[in-house]
Image (cartoon, rainbow over all chains, first blue to last red; front, top):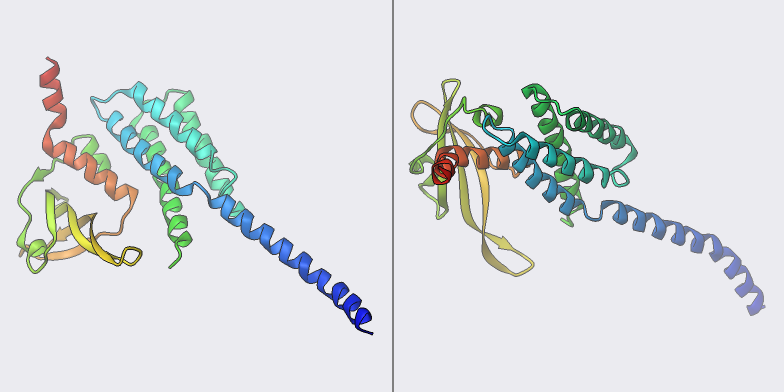
Length: 135
Length: 110
C-alpha cells in the first residue's frame, strides 16, 4: 500500500520537478543576460566623455573616431543582453554610429548624432541597473 | 547645453557657491560653476555629503553632480541631482571650460 502511494507521489512530483528546472534555467538566463551591464555602462560613460573632448573645435577628430569604434564594440557586446523589444533600437544605434565612423563624417550634426545616440543607450542601461538593485 | 559648451558658445565661471545652495546644510561644494543660458542663471556643482550605507551601518562620504536654475532673487528655482551620464558629461566639459585647462596645456607645449 505504502509503496503504491510512493509510486503515485513520484509520478505526481515529476511535473513539479520539471517546472522547478525550467524556472531555475529562466532565472539563470535572466541574470546572465544582465551580467556585466554596470561595467559596460561605466565604459560607455567614460568613452562618451573622451569623445566629447575630441569633437571640440580644437579636438582630435581621429581620436574621436577611435572613441566611436570603442563605443561600437561596447554596444555589440550588449546585443545578447537586452530584451527583444530593445534590440532593434540597439542595432539601429550601432549601424548609425558605424556609418559616422566608417565614412569619416565630420559634420557637427553627424558627430553630435553619434553622441546623443550613445547617451540614449547609456541612459537606458542606467535604468536597467537601477531595476537590478535589490531594494 | 553640452553642445554649446563644447563648441565654446557657452562659457562657465568657477565662483563661490551661492548661499541658497549651501546654507542650512553640512554639505561641501568643492566646485561650483555658473553661466547665463538664454537669460537664465544656471549653476552646476558637485555636492559632497555623508550618506547612510546600510551594508556598513555607517555614514560615508559620497558625492553627486547637480544642476540648478536660479530666479532673479538668487533663490533656487529648480534643482536636479538625479545621477546621469549626460549631466556628468556636462559637468566635466563645463569644468574643463571654466578651468581653461586646454589653454594651460597649449601654453605648456609651446
